[in-house]
Image 1 (cartoon, rainbow, N blue to C red):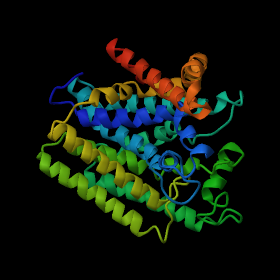
Image 2: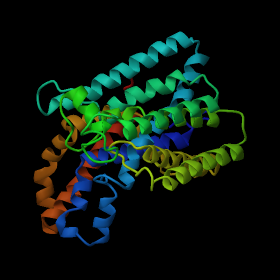
Image 3: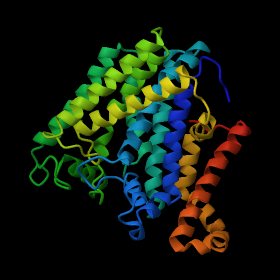
Image 4: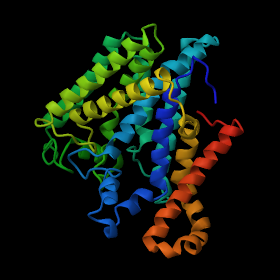
Length: 363
Protein backbone atom coordinates (compact mmCIF):
# COMPACT_ATOMS: atom_id res chain seq x y z
CA UNK A 1 0.00 0.00 0.00
CA UNK A 2 1.21 3.47 -0.82
CA UNK A 3 2.52 5.12 2.32
CA UNK A 4 4.19 8.29 1.10
CA UNK A 5 3.74 11.44 3.13
CA UNK A 6 1.45 12.98 0.52
CA UNK A 7 -1.21 10.32 1.03
CA UNK A 8 -3.83 10.57 3.76
CA UNK A 9 -4.01 7.04 5.11
CA UNK A 10 -6.75 8.24 7.45
CA UNK A 11 -8.94 9.02 4.45
CA UNK A 12 -8.22 5.58 2.95
CA UNK A 13 -9.31 3.98 6.23
CA UNK A 14 -12.38 6.22 6.67
CA UNK A 15 -13.59 5.57 3.13
CA UNK A 16 -12.78 1.86 3.32
CA UNK A 17 -14.58 1.36 6.64
CA UNK A 18 -17.65 3.18 5.33
CA UNK A 19 -17.72 1.06 2.17
CA UNK A 20 -17.13 -2.10 4.22
CA UNK A 21 -20.26 -1.31 6.23
CA UNK A 22 -22.20 -0.58 3.03
CA UNK A 23 -21.37 -3.95 1.50
CA UNK A 24 -22.04 -5.62 4.87
CA UNK A 25 -25.65 -4.53 4.39
CA UNK A 26 -25.83 -6.56 1.17
CA UNK A 27 -24.58 -9.65 3.03
CA UNK A 28 -27.88 -9.59 5.01
CA UNK A 29 -25.92 -9.65 8.26
CA UNK A 30 -27.74 -6.67 9.73
CA UNK A 31 -31.13 -8.20 8.96
CA UNK A 32 -30.33 -11.34 10.93
CA UNK A 33 -29.02 -9.35 13.90
CA UNK A 34 -32.54 -8.01 14.52
CA UNK A 35 -34.29 -11.35 14.16
CA UNK A 36 -37.20 -11.91 16.61
CA UNK A 37 -35.23 -14.74 18.26
CA UNK A 38 -32.65 -12.20 19.42
CA UNK A 39 -35.14 -9.65 20.75
CA UNK A 40 -34.11 -8.28 24.12
CA UNK A 41 -30.47 -9.24 23.70
CA UNK A 42 -27.41 -7.01 23.33
CA UNK A 43 -26.95 -8.32 19.77
CA UNK A 44 -30.45 -7.13 18.85
CA UNK A 45 -29.80 -3.73 20.43
CA UNK A 46 -26.59 -3.36 18.44
CA UNK A 47 -28.30 -4.64 15.31
CA UNK A 48 -30.93 -1.90 15.57
CA UNK A 49 -28.17 0.68 15.20
CA UNK A 50 -27.49 -0.75 11.72
CA UNK A 51 -30.99 0.08 10.51
CA UNK A 52 -32.52 3.44 9.66
CA UNK A 53 -34.85 5.14 12.11
CA UNK A 54 -38.41 4.87 10.81
CA UNK A 55 -38.88 8.63 10.95
CA UNK A 56 -37.65 10.94 13.70
CA UNK A 57 -34.38 10.29 15.53
CA UNK A 58 -30.95 8.96 14.69
CA UNK A 59 -29.26 5.57 14.53
CA UNK A 60 -25.64 4.96 13.59
CA UNK A 61 -26.77 3.66 10.19
CA UNK A 62 -28.32 7.05 9.42
CA UNK A 63 -24.78 8.47 9.41
CA UNK A 64 -23.37 6.21 6.70
CA UNK A 65 -24.62 8.29 3.76
CA UNK A 66 -23.39 11.58 5.33
CA UNK A 67 -20.03 9.87 5.93
CA UNK A 68 -19.80 8.79 2.30
CA UNK A 69 -20.83 12.16 0.86
CA UNK A 70 -18.43 13.93 3.19
CA UNK A 71 -15.57 11.58 2.25
CA UNK A 72 -16.12 12.28 -1.45
CA UNK A 73 -15.83 15.98 -0.66
CA UNK A 74 -12.58 15.47 1.28
CA UNK A 75 -11.09 13.57 -1.66
CA UNK A 76 -12.01 16.24 -4.23
CA UNK A 77 -9.27 18.82 -3.49
CA UNK A 78 -6.71 16.01 -3.11
CA UNK A 79 -7.64 14.54 -6.49
CA UNK A 80 -7.90 17.86 -8.30
CA UNK A 81 -4.58 19.14 -6.93
CA UNK A 82 -2.88 16.00 -8.27
CA UNK A 83 -4.52 16.45 -11.68
CA UNK A 84 -3.50 20.11 -11.82
CA UNK A 85 0.07 19.17 -10.85
CA UNK A 86 0.06 16.94 -13.93
CA UNK A 87 -0.97 19.86 -16.11
CA UNK A 88 -4.78 19.70 -16.20
CA UNK A 89 -6.53 23.05 -16.57
CA UNK A 90 -9.62 24.14 -14.65
CA UNK A 91 -11.63 23.67 -17.84
CA UNK A 92 -10.52 20.05 -18.00
CA UNK A 93 -11.34 19.55 -14.34
CA UNK A 94 -14.82 21.02 -14.90
CA UNK A 95 -15.41 18.71 -17.84
CA UNK A 96 -14.32 15.75 -15.71
CA UNK A 97 -16.58 16.83 -12.83
CA UNK A 98 -19.68 17.17 -15.03
CA UNK A 99 -18.97 13.86 -16.74
CA UNK A 100 -18.51 12.09 -13.41
CA UNK A 101 -21.69 13.61 -11.98
CA UNK A 102 -23.66 12.55 -15.06
CA UNK A 103 -22.40 8.97 -14.84
CA UNK A 104 -23.22 8.75 -11.12
CA UNK A 105 -26.72 10.05 -11.83
CA UNK A 106 -27.30 7.52 -14.61
CA UNK A 107 -25.93 4.62 -12.57
CA UNK A 108 -27.91 5.62 -9.49
CA UNK A 109 -31.10 5.97 -11.52
CA UNK A 110 -30.48 2.69 -13.37
CA UNK A 111 -30.39 0.75 -10.09
CA UNK A 112 -34.06 1.63 -9.56
CA UNK A 113 -34.97 0.17 -12.95
CA UNK A 114 -33.56 -3.30 -12.28
CA UNK A 115 -36.15 -4.79 -9.91
CA UNK A 116 -39.33 -3.65 -11.71
CA UNK A 117 -37.72 -4.33 -15.10
CA UNK A 118 -39.00 -1.04 -16.43
CA UNK A 119 -37.94 2.59 -16.50
CA UNK A 120 -38.79 4.44 -13.29
CA UNK A 121 -37.68 7.90 -12.28
CA UNK A 122 -36.25 7.75 -8.78
CA UNK A 123 -33.11 9.39 -7.47
CA UNK A 124 -32.97 8.69 -3.75
CA UNK A 125 -29.97 6.34 -3.55
CA UNK A 126 -26.49 7.48 -2.61
CA UNK A 127 -25.08 7.51 -6.16
CA UNK A 128 -27.87 9.62 -7.63
CA UNK A 129 -27.85 12.02 -4.68
CA UNK A 130 -24.08 12.27 -4.80
CA UNK A 131 -24.18 13.33 -8.44
CA UNK A 132 -25.92 16.53 -7.34
CA UNK A 133 -23.91 17.18 -4.18
CA UNK A 134 -20.67 16.57 -6.07
CA UNK A 135 -21.51 19.20 -8.68
CA UNK A 136 -22.62 21.77 -6.12
CA UNK A 137 -19.39 21.22 -4.19
CA UNK A 138 -17.33 21.56 -7.36
CA UNK A 139 -18.96 24.91 -8.16
CA UNK A 140 -17.46 26.43 -4.99
CA UNK A 141 -14.24 24.43 -4.73
CA UNK A 142 -12.12 27.44 -5.74
CA UNK A 143 -13.86 29.81 -3.32
CA UNK A 144 -12.65 30.78 0.13
CA UNK A 145 -13.74 28.53 3.01
CA UNK A 146 -16.13 31.15 4.41
CA UNK A 147 -17.91 31.39 1.06
CA UNK A 148 -18.07 27.59 0.77
CA UNK A 149 -19.54 27.28 4.25
CA UNK A 150 -21.89 30.19 3.61
CA UNK A 151 -23.15 28.54 0.42
CA UNK A 152 -23.77 25.28 2.28
CA UNK A 153 -25.70 27.09 5.01
CA UNK A 154 -27.75 28.85 2.34
CA UNK A 155 -28.75 25.50 0.83
CA UNK A 156 -29.80 24.26 4.27
CA UNK A 157 -31.82 27.39 5.01
CA UNK A 158 -33.54 27.32 1.61
CA UNK A 159 -34.56 23.70 2.21
CA UNK A 160 -35.80 24.50 5.71
CA UNK A 161 -37.88 27.41 4.40
CA UNK A 162 -39.41 25.38 1.55
CA UNK A 163 -40.51 22.62 3.93
CA UNK A 164 -41.92 25.06 6.46
CA UNK A 165 -43.77 27.37 4.07
CA UNK A 166 -44.73 25.09 1.18
CA UNK A 167 -48.25 26.30 0.26
CA UNK A 168 -49.88 23.32 -1.49
CA UNK A 169 -52.68 21.81 0.59
CA UNK A 170 -52.04 18.25 1.64
CA UNK A 171 -48.28 18.77 1.49
CA UNK A 172 -48.02 21.72 3.87
CA UNK A 173 -47.12 19.76 7.01
CA UNK A 174 -43.36 20.18 7.13
CA UNK A 175 -42.39 17.14 9.17
CA UNK A 176 -45.29 14.71 8.69
CA UNK A 177 -44.55 11.56 6.61
CA UNK A 178 -46.09 11.79 3.15
CA UNK A 179 -47.54 15.24 3.78
CA UNK A 180 -44.57 17.49 3.17
CA UNK A 181 -42.71 19.16 0.33
CA UNK A 182 -40.43 16.14 -0.11
CA UNK A 183 -43.42 13.89 -0.79
CA UNK A 184 -44.83 16.40 -3.28
CA UNK A 185 -41.46 16.65 -5.04
CA UNK A 186 -41.26 12.86 -5.33
CA UNK A 187 -44.69 12.79 -6.96
CA UNK A 188 -43.70 15.60 -9.30
CA UNK A 189 -40.60 13.74 -10.50
CA UNK A 190 -41.63 10.09 -10.42
CA UNK A 191 -45.43 10.19 -10.28
CA UNK A 192 -45.57 8.52 -6.88
CA UNK A 193 -44.42 9.03 -3.31
CA UNK A 194 -41.76 6.55 -2.27
CA UNK A 195 -43.10 4.09 0.32
CA UNK A 196 -40.26 4.81 2.71
CA UNK A 197 -40.75 8.59 2.44
CA UNK A 198 -37.21 9.11 1.13
CA UNK A 199 -37.13 12.52 -0.55
CA UNK A 200 -35.32 13.07 -3.84
CA UNK A 201 -34.89 16.71 -2.83
CA UNK A 202 -32.46 15.57 -0.12
CA UNK A 203 -29.58 16.13 -2.54
CA UNK A 204 -29.90 19.90 -2.05
CA UNK A 205 -29.50 20.21 1.74
CA UNK A 206 -27.07 17.28 1.99
CA UNK A 207 -24.78 18.97 -0.52
CA UNK A 208 -23.54 20.62 2.66
CA UNK A 209 -21.89 17.33 3.62
CA UNK A 210 -19.86 17.21 0.40
CA UNK A 211 -19.02 20.92 0.60
CA UNK A 212 -17.84 20.54 4.20
CA UNK A 213 -15.76 17.62 3.00
CA UNK A 214 -14.11 19.91 0.44
CA UNK A 215 -13.35 22.44 3.18
CA UNK A 216 -11.88 19.69 5.36
CA UNK A 217 -9.83 18.28 2.49
CA UNK A 218 -8.38 21.68 1.65
CA UNK A 219 -7.54 22.16 5.32
CA UNK A 220 -5.72 18.82 5.54
CA UNK A 221 -3.53 19.49 2.50
CA UNK A 222 -2.94 23.09 3.53
CA UNK A 223 0.01 24.63 5.33
CA UNK A 224 -1.40 24.73 8.86
CA UNK A 225 0.19 22.63 11.57
CA UNK A 226 -1.35 19.26 12.41
CA UNK A 227 -2.47 20.65 15.78
CA UNK A 228 -4.27 23.53 14.07
CA UNK A 229 -5.92 21.15 11.61
CA UNK A 230 -7.19 18.89 14.38
CA UNK A 231 -8.40 21.87 16.42
CA UNK A 232 -10.34 23.37 13.50
CA UNK A 233 -11.92 20.01 12.61
CA UNK A 234 -13.00 19.41 16.20
CA UNK A 235 -14.36 22.95 16.57
CA UNK A 236 -16.31 22.62 13.32
CA UNK A 237 -17.68 19.19 14.20
CA UNK A 238 -18.69 20.11 17.74
CA UNK A 239 -20.28 23.37 16.58
CA UNK A 240 -22.41 21.52 14.02
CA UNK A 241 -23.51 19.00 16.68
CA UNK A 242 -24.39 21.71 19.21
CA UNK A 243 -26.48 23.64 16.68
CA UNK A 244 -28.08 20.50 15.24
CA UNK A 245 -29.04 18.90 18.53
CA UNK A 246 -29.83 22.29 20.07
CA UNK A 247 -32.47 23.12 17.44
CA UNK A 248 -33.89 19.60 17.24
CA UNK A 249 -36.79 20.63 19.47
CA UNK A 250 -37.79 23.13 16.74
CA UNK A 251 -36.87 21.10 13.67
CA UNK A 252 -36.79 17.35 14.34
CA UNK A 253 -33.85 15.23 13.18
CA UNK A 254 -35.27 13.29 10.23
CA UNK A 255 -32.93 11.62 7.75
CA UNK A 256 -35.63 10.59 5.27
CA UNK A 257 -36.28 14.21 4.34
CA UNK A 258 -32.85 15.51 5.45
CA UNK A 259 -34.05 18.22 7.79
CA UNK A 260 -31.64 21.01 8.63
CA UNK A 261 -30.90 19.49 12.04
CA UNK A 262 -30.14 16.12 10.48
CA UNK A 263 -27.72 17.73 8.01
CA UNK A 264 -25.95 19.53 10.86
CA UNK A 265 -25.76 16.49 13.12
CA UNK A 266 -24.74 14.17 10.27
CA UNK A 267 -22.09 16.65 9.18
CA UNK A 268 -20.82 17.14 12.71
CA UNK A 269 -20.28 13.44 13.28
CA UNK A 270 -18.67 13.12 9.84
CA UNK A 271 -16.15 15.86 10.63
CA UNK A 272 -15.34 14.42 14.06
CA UNK A 273 -14.88 10.94 12.57
CA UNK A 274 -12.33 12.37 10.13
CA UNK A 275 -10.56 14.23 12.94
CA UNK A 276 -10.29 11.02 14.95
CA UNK A 277 -9.01 8.99 11.99
CA UNK A 278 -6.50 11.71 11.08
CA UNK A 279 -5.22 11.98 14.65
CA UNK A 280 -4.89 8.24 15.22
CA UNK A 281 -3.58 7.18 11.80
CA UNK A 282 -1.71 10.11 10.27
CA UNK A 283 -0.45 11.83 13.41
CA UNK A 284 -0.02 9.05 15.99
CA UNK A 285 0.86 6.56 13.22
CA UNK A 286 -1.32 3.72 14.50
CA UNK A 287 -1.74 2.14 11.09
CA UNK A 288 -2.33 -1.55 11.74
CA UNK A 289 -5.49 -2.73 10.03
CA UNK A 290 -5.71 0.25 7.69
CA UNK A 291 -5.09 -1.89 4.60
CA UNK A 292 -7.87 -4.34 5.54
CA UNK A 293 -10.49 -1.60 5.15
CA UNK A 294 -8.66 0.60 2.66
CA UNK A 295 -8.78 -2.02 -0.11
CA UNK A 296 -12.60 -1.82 -0.04
CA UNK A 297 -12.48 1.94 -0.44
CA UNK A 298 -10.15 1.74 -3.44
CA UNK A 299 -12.90 0.33 -5.65
CA UNK A 300 -16.00 1.85 -4.05
CA UNK A 301 -18.09 2.19 -7.20
CA UNK A 302 -17.41 -1.33 -8.43
CA UNK A 303 -18.07 -3.15 -5.15
CA UNK A 304 -21.19 -1.08 -4.41
CA UNK A 305 -22.69 -1.85 -7.84
CA UNK A 306 -21.53 -5.48 -7.78
CA UNK A 307 -23.13 -6.13 -4.40
CA UNK A 308 -26.25 -4.12 -5.28
CA UNK A 309 -27.08 -5.83 -8.58
CA UNK A 310 -26.89 -9.36 -7.23
CA UNK A 311 -23.24 -10.15 -6.56
CA UNK A 312 -23.83 -10.64 -2.84
CA UNK A 313 -26.93 -12.73 -3.49
CA UNK A 314 -24.98 -14.90 -5.95
CA UNK A 315 -22.22 -15.55 -3.41
CA UNK A 316 -24.84 -16.46 -0.81
CA UNK A 317 -26.51 -18.86 -3.23
CA UNK A 318 -23.21 -20.56 -4.09
CA UNK A 319 -22.20 -21.09 -0.46
CA UNK A 320 -25.65 -21.85 0.97
CA UNK A 321 -25.36 -25.69 0.66
CA UNK A 322 -21.91 -25.66 2.27
CA UNK A 323 -23.13 -23.34 5.00
CA UNK A 324 -26.03 -25.63 5.85
CA UNK A 325 -23.67 -28.59 6.02
CA UNK A 326 -21.00 -26.87 8.10
CA UNK A 327 -23.06 -24.58 10.30
CA UNK A 328 -26.41 -26.37 10.49
CA UNK A 329 -25.65 -27.51 14.05
CA UNK A 330 -25.89 -23.86 15.19
CA UNK A 331 -29.55 -23.64 14.15
CA UNK A 332 -31.16 -21.81 11.26
CA UNK A 333 -30.39 -18.32 12.58
CA UNK A 334 -26.81 -19.18 13.52
CA UNK A 335 -26.19 -20.67 10.07
CA UNK A 336 -27.65 -17.57 8.39
CA UNK A 337 -25.45 -15.22 10.43
CA UNK A 338 -22.30 -17.25 9.75
CA UNK A 339 -23.15 -17.41 6.04
CA UNK A 340 -23.50 -13.63 6.04
CA UNK A 341 -19.95 -13.37 7.37
CA UNK A 342 -18.81 -15.70 4.56
CA UNK A 343 -20.53 -13.49 1.96
CA UNK A 344 -18.97 -10.38 3.48
CA UNK A 345 -15.53 -12.01 3.46
CA UNK A 346 -15.78 -12.85 -0.24
CA UNK A 347 -16.95 -9.34 -1.10
CA UNK A 348 -13.90 -8.07 0.79
CA UNK A 349 -11.65 -10.63 -0.92
CA UNK A 350 -12.77 -9.42 -4.35
CA UNK A 351 -11.62 -5.92 -3.36
CA UNK A 352 -8.35 -7.30 -2.00
CA UNK A 353 -7.73 -9.29 -5.19
CA UNK A 354 -8.38 -6.20 -7.33
CA UNK A 355 -6.00 -4.19 -5.15
CA UNK A 356 -3.28 -6.83 -5.58
CA UNK A 357 -3.83 -6.85 -9.36
CA UNK A 358 -3.87 -3.03 -9.36
CA UNK A 359 -7.34 -2.99 -10.89
CA UNK A 360 -9.06 0.25 -9.95
CA UNK A 361 -12.38 1.09 -11.61
CA UNK A 362 -13.12 4.82 -11.55
CA UNK A 363 -15.30 7.25 -13.44
